[in-house]
Length: 82
Image 1 (spheres, helix red, strand yellow):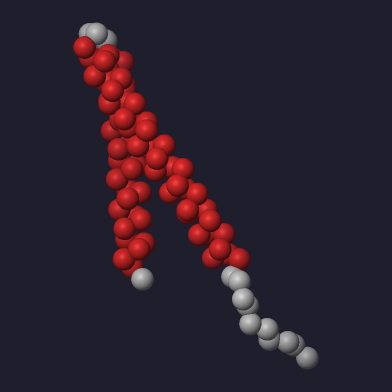
Image 2 (cartoon, helix red, strand yellow; image 1 turned 45 degrees about the horizontal axis):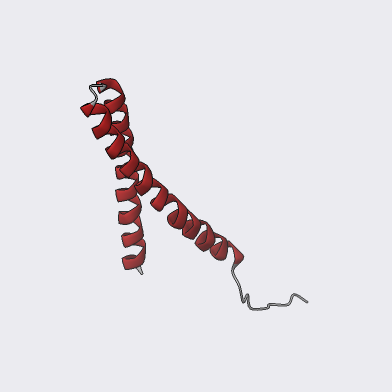
């Protein structure tokens, strides 16, 4: 005879919630921090005339800003989807 017990905790969904929460809680603030760092350093390097370094820091700021914006949009869509 096969017993059919109700599942109280779905561990795969719980794992997904924990991993996404960790990614949002650590990843998005890190992306914001690196975007801020890239922006500040790009301005400093540009003022010093170090244009290659300024461009690289600007690219860092842009990439991290895009990661941050994507994370915020995905979070908004995840909340409003249900």
